[in-house]
Length: 79
Image 1 (cartoon, rainbow, N blue to C red):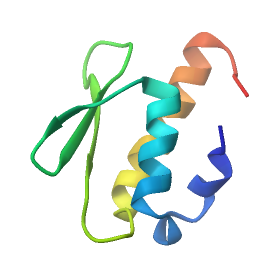
Image 2 (image 1 turned 90 degrees about the vertical axis):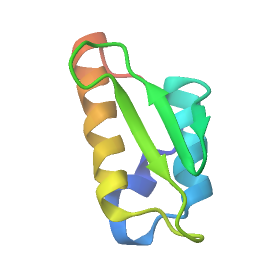
Image 3 (image 1 turned 180 degrees about the vertical axis):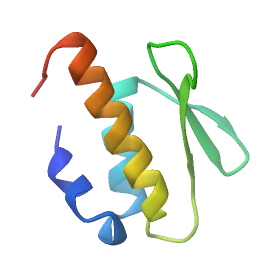
Image 4 (image 1 turned 120 degrees about the vertical axis):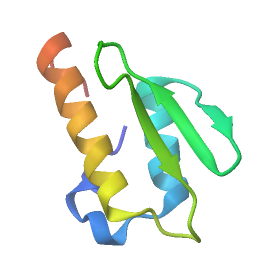
């Protein structure tokens, strides 16, 4: 998994972020333009990506980064 793409949230292609999320969280539920990934903890139990052209929205990149960091903290760092 290439988490390096999360280091510059303003320069991430949507398809690259979608593929990263698939490798971490599994297949999403798709509702229109939204790709919703379930996460393994209670509370805010999902990551929601919405296609908007070729690039990912920076706030969504940051949401993915936080979710991956939370998962690594709870389950041990994965590479």
